[in-house]
Length: 118
Image: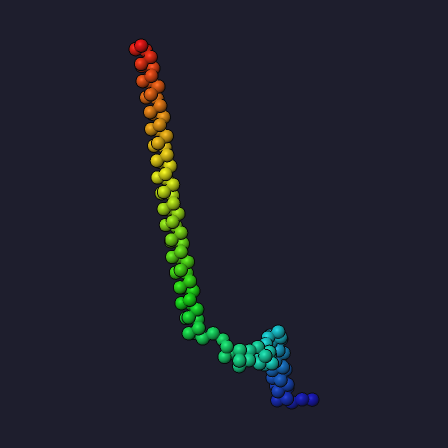
């Protein structure tokens, strides 16, 4: 038979064993020390981007976006300019056509009027 003290110790050992089993179950699939060691080497860490690298990248991207925005603005201005030029050309052609047709109508009416007088 075991004493009360031994029973308490065995019970505590069982509880600790259960906790260890639970922790091991939770750790399944987690990265091990070896995984972490192989994840990144010192050279990999040295080659990682610094804050300065990221800032320089941000500046380059901003400049590139500024250039694109500037080009798009120029393209829109050119499109509007072409549109206004075409509109002006169309209006001039319409004006000439209307003037020509009006002159033809006046000439026909004049001829009719002269024919009626004669």
